[in-house]
Image (cartoon, rainbow, N blue to C red):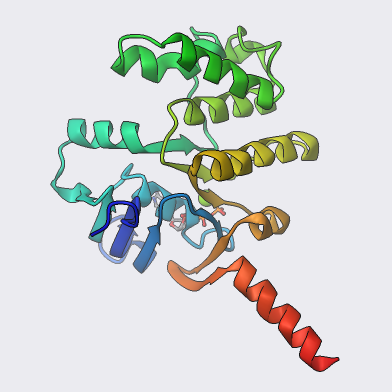
Length: 247
Ligand SMILES: Nc1ncnc2c1ncn2[C@@H]1O[C@H](COP(=O)(O)OP(=O)(O)OP(=O)(O)O)[C@@H](O)[C@H]1O
Ligand SMILES: [Mg+2]
C-alpha cells in the first residue's frame, strides 16, 4: 500500500471486556482508522467507550479481541520494548491525568523524550519546545516544577510535552477539559495550526460540541459501538444545498 495513504493507526474489529465472565463490554467490534494528517473528534455520552477506544488506539491496553495496527504494524505481535519505541516515534498522548515528573521543571519534562532517546535535545529541539510553551501562554512558567503551577498550567505543560517530539498523531482525551475558555481556545488554535502546518494528526475526545464541530471528521460512540462517522464539511455542504433547494 502507498505509505502516504496508509492509516497511522487502525483498529480491526476490536472488542474490549473489562473484568472476568460477563464483565463490561466497553467496546464491541470497532473498526476505526486515522489517515495521516486527519483531525478527528470522538464524541459520545459518559461511559460509551471513548477513553477505552483511545487507550486501544494508543496500544496502552490490549483489546479482548480484534487487532490494532500502528504504522501498519500489528501491535499484538510486538513486545513491550518494541511497542514503547513504536509509540514514542509515532504518537503523542494528552490525557486527563498527566504524569509530569515533579522533580523536573515543565521544560525539562517536555525535553525528556530527546534526553532519553536522542542523546539530548539539539538547539532546534529546544527552540521548538520553547516556542510551544509560548504558544500555550507558559513563557514565564516553563522553568517551574509542576507542583508550583495550577492544574490548568500543568495541563498546558503536558500538552507541550505531548507535542514536543513532533508525533504523527496526537491522541487527546478532553485536552481542554480543565481549561477556561480563553486557554482552551489557545490550546485548540495551536492543535489546529500544527494540523495545517505540519500535518500532525489528531484524535480528540471531547464533550464540547463547539470543539467537535471544528474537527474535520466526527465519530460518535454509543454503548461501545461507532454509530456515526462523518466528514463535517460534507454534512455542512449538504445542509447548505438543502437550504438552497428549499428556498
Ligand atoms: N478499568 C476498568 N475496569 C472496569 N470497567 C471499566 C474500566 N474502564 C472503563 N470501564 C467501563 O467501560 C465503559 C466505557 O468506559 P470509558 O472510560 O471508555 O467511557 P468514556 O466514554 O470515556 O466515558 P467518560 O466520558 O465518562 O470519560 C464504562 O461502562 C466503564 O464503566
Ligand atoms: Mg473518558
